[in-house]
Length: 437
Ligand code: DLL
Image 1 (cartoon, rainbow, N blue to C red):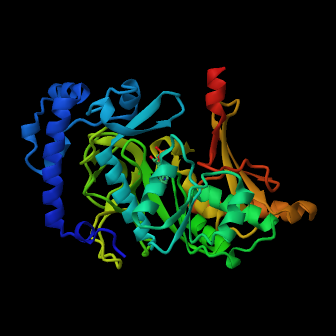
Image 2: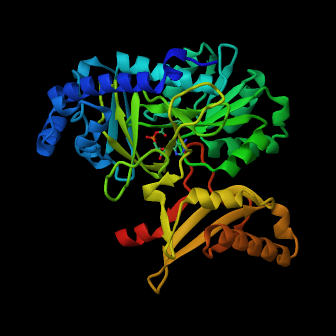
Image 3: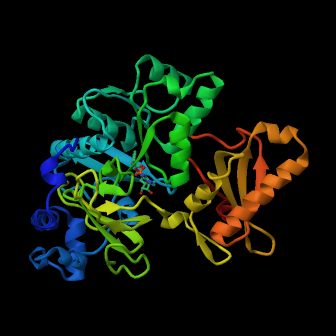
């Protein structure tokens, strides 16, 4: 079922007219309420009245994560602090958090977009949503919770962790939709196996997974192991949390809630806006936020936008599932590689477990040394070593074919790579640690 048919199936012309009206109001709103934006617009020589068409958005300056940190806590607030009814933060590696403030209207908006997302995954009032995203300052828990409320489902606010209890509840309460990070879902599958449980006896039919990159082959693995259909959901604290976009039953790109979040793709080096279909950095403008509205936020996420005649009937623009983040991209012997590409190759290989880590170090010759740690089934370690060598050579060869580079492969025993109940850490960069010492 389409949650908001009027908006989600709107014609291109109507959508653009709606976006333009909202954009004009937004620019006037932030110019008069947020000193930070007034200064930036003045410095760029742009006034609210200069926004006459949607294309004029490119006259506005970008906002970066660093700026959001520098203005901590309330430098980007556009309303009276008392009007904030909820506050979330995301903390990056530097420690200073990014603040997202929600007025009552912002929370209503969040509920609406999350309702749309859960409906895209086929959710309705008959569902039991087991919400295993973390509740707290992280937006995953509460965001999904609001969406479950919006579609009238029962929600199990179990949060992440305590995996055995998760599985017992999943069975006892007959959960039909599981929401968590994709890596956590695979950990659940592992624990279920140890407990002698079989997902075929559960009632799960859909999983709504996001908050971290995952590949197409990881999807196949999850769908097989958890016996459900796996949908990709995307979002970020700065913009709203989860709910920016989600996959529908076609599982071919994520429909963006573009009446609220205006997307652009830019060349990350030059800042130039790229046409639909071209790959680059995703930029969002929140068209209706009141608490912490953001103009042209550089997400650092890499993808492209496209439109198709989607079989679900929605007409909203789509983003391809993320390739990765600018920050995660590795340059290995001159080749750009995202962890998700490595994952995609690994997941095709039967003998390996879906748990891996990429370790980057600087060897004495000052060249970066990259080692791929992959778990293989216990039985291979008890077998003759030549079997292990065979698997190692096979992974090596597959990576070379797919990525065009040679990686050092280290096979490790099951469970030796740390499991995650939230966002998995796929890359261990030892060069940073050395730099700090
Ligand atoms: O991760 C919000 C969220 C919660 C999304 C639950 C989906 C489900 P942050 O902690 O601020 O917010 O992290 C945002 O996570 O810029 C992406 O790099 C990454 N990310 C989020 N969803 C996906 C996804 C939440 N589906 C950052 N695929 C974003 C790949 C994702 N990466």
